[in-house]
Each structure stands twice: as C-alpha cells, then as structure tokens.
Image 1: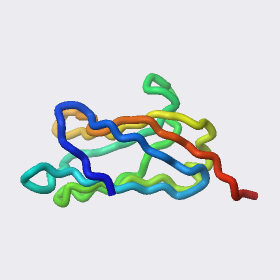
Image 2 (image 1 turned 45 degrees about the vertical axis):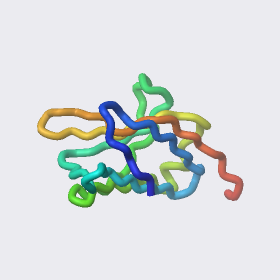
Image 3 (image 1 turned 120 degrees about the vertical axis):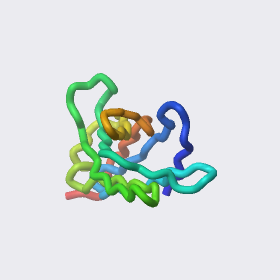
Image 4 (image 1 turned 120 degrees about the horizontal axis):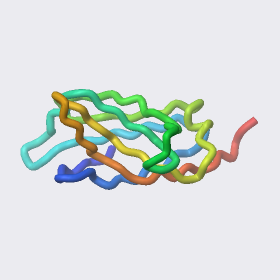
Length: 116
C-alpha cells in the first residue's frame, strides 16, 4: 500500500515489476481531512517511453471512489511479455471532461529466473 500526497502536478512513483509474476499495488489518496473521493474514469498504461505510440501494458484498476483507494494489477501473462528492463507509466483520471495525471514514474522490469 502506497500513500499518495495530493499536489498540483503528478506525484512521482517508480514501480518495480518481476517478469512473469502477477503484480499488484494499492494506492491510497488522502489529505489532512481523510480519503479523497475519486470520481470519473481511471486508466494507467506502461510504455517504452512517454512518446511511444505502442502501449506495452494497460493496468487493471479497481477504484473505491469513496475510500480513496485504487488497486492496480497486471496478470502474470502480461508481465511475462514485458521484455525490456525499463519503461515509464502514469495514472490518469477523466472526470466531467477534465483530465488529470495523478501519478507518473519509471518502471523497472526484473528478469525472472524460474521458468520453463
């Protein structure tokens, strides 16, 4: 579980993924008054570089808007297909036509050892 500080721009959060494993992480959005409501639609993608036309992976997001939490998941088949060692990602919200990037960072992809 990672607590997310609310700021004007995207917060910086680097991720580490182990190739071939199911990856999941929960982010809690709160301020001094408690959980921040999370309305709208959310998406998060991994790309080789920010300007890459190809999406390497799209995270499955489970949003608890009232509790202010988002759980992101990549299944084992998806992480097995991440062949590079470095990528970038971000988490974006769209609400009533307003788009906001909440988190962004690097993705370190570690090679798996145990495999067929």
